[in-house]
Length: 233
Ligand SMILES: NC(=O)c1ccc[n+]([C@@H]2O[C@H](COP(=O)([O-])OP(=O)(O)OC[C@H]3O[C@@H](n4cnc5c(N)ncnc54)[C@H](OP(=O)(O)O)[C@@H]3O)[C@@H](O)[C@H]2O)c1
Image (tube, rainbow, N blue to C red; front, side, top):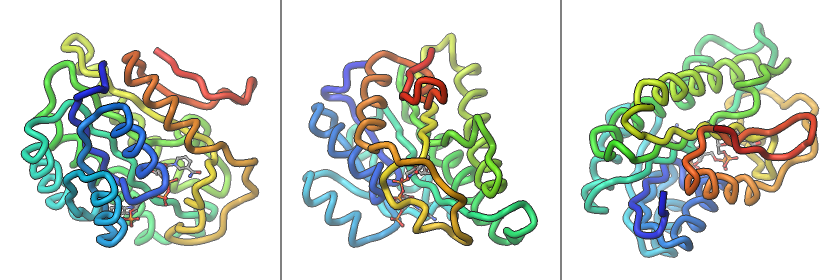
């Protein structure tokens, strides 16, 4: 895919990863629209880049749909949806309440599915969907049971979507980063993180996502043996 001139929505652009992704996409010539929950951060990024924006809350699926529809209209169409919104909850299986697990799945699974569903009404057959799952989707981790389960669910959803649309040419990119340098774990719904490895520079993951989109890959993942980002498919 040629990113130059492509119309892209980043849902979760108020986060550190989403903001960097939005800036890099704009730098590559894409026409970007940004979605976020925090009004101040969203306005500031949209003003900096001179691009349209829409507020949403991932726990409100109607706001997911409204935001995608409004930005697709503002951009005059849509070629790529990137869902980067997400939240963590730390604790062993019995330590995270059922209510918190519900909120976690609302943000990490139901909201992204609503965003993707809305985007599929606008994307061309050879468009692209990018979803930020996580390394824990592939390697469920002790102390991260509920978070691992939510990211596995998102990863399974986009994998099945890719299989459904393979013949029609839709690129579905599952991004499974390891721990990154974004302070994501400080904003968890509950609990303290287990010991985490040294963080990866999120800008390297963003660069790998842009390359993978250009090449039509299906996964950007972390290879545990070589300790490096790899693009698969
Ligand atoms: N950082 C890591 O170590 C790591 C590793 C693997 C995967 N990931 C995934 O990478 C993605 C980006 O995270 P990040 O590192 O950039 O962390 P971040 O800076 O904390 O960004 C999180 C984003 O999620 C949004 N969000 C949270 N709850 C929301 C809700 N209810 N409705 C709408 N948006 C909501 C935040 O929006 P507001 O700021 O507007 O509230 C923000 O845009 C997440 O999906 C995360 O699971 C992160």
